Length: 156
Image 1 (cartoon, one colour):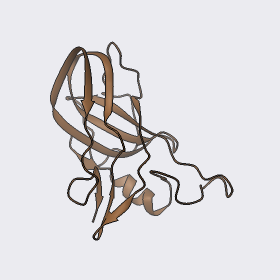
Image 2 (cartoon, rainbow, N blue to C red):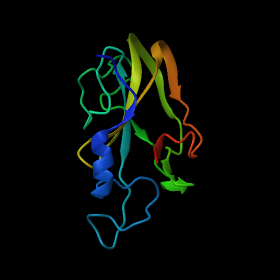
Image 3 (cartoon, helix red, strand yellow):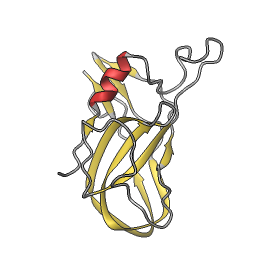
């Protein structure tokens, strides 16, 4: 089974349970009534032979890439944009591109998993792109415009 792009089903229900705090602090944290916090998000790369998709519930090292310049678990996601709405669609996009420098990954990869490392590595979304390999280079995923048509997360 190949990787497939999707907002993780578990994330949708976890939003309604209040388990994720994306973007700038807009509500009081679940753990402190006096010190609001924002969850820390991470992005991990996965092999083209993986099977991530809507059923992915948490970060796992299974099928994660490995190679020079890559650390298991991936990189921090810049999470400074608060979720908002555009018309009737809830939207959110990381506030900066995802970039890995000095990479050598000789096995084909085609997927990034964004997950909430603050909340026991709960999966948020699986995003696919064309199969890649890289030798001693920088791999960058440019984030889309944060609007109802292009946002990384769109809940209509």
